[in-house]
Length: 147
Image 1 (cartoon, one colour):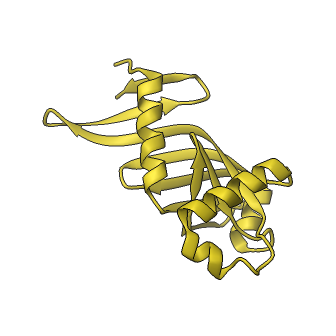
Image 2 (image 1 turned 135 degrees about the vertical axis):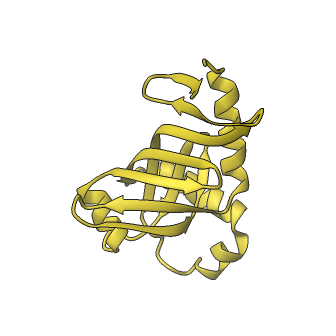
């Protein structure tokens, strides 16, 4: 069943703006790990902060394909570290707004590198009219549909 791309996008954006943590899974193609992380978003783009020498950082550098999960949402994305000053400033500003206590606590630390997660696909698990289904937002194909 075809869905409205913009309506489903807006539903996802509103959810991302409300949540504070997300589970991030990374792999170096031989070893898979997952952990909970704080996140901020700009639309559907998700920003995380981590060191390049952390386990997840090394895995992202080796294999940018990541998966994330929160509540009823599964996300497939490509993750990259960025050196773009505007992107880093946007991420930092959003973290300061969303997590003022944490931002203040770590304000004297050197900024951790910013990871940009560009989504490929979102799947929302739903129970509608007594039936289980997934609403899918396929960014790559620019489609929204229910299965």
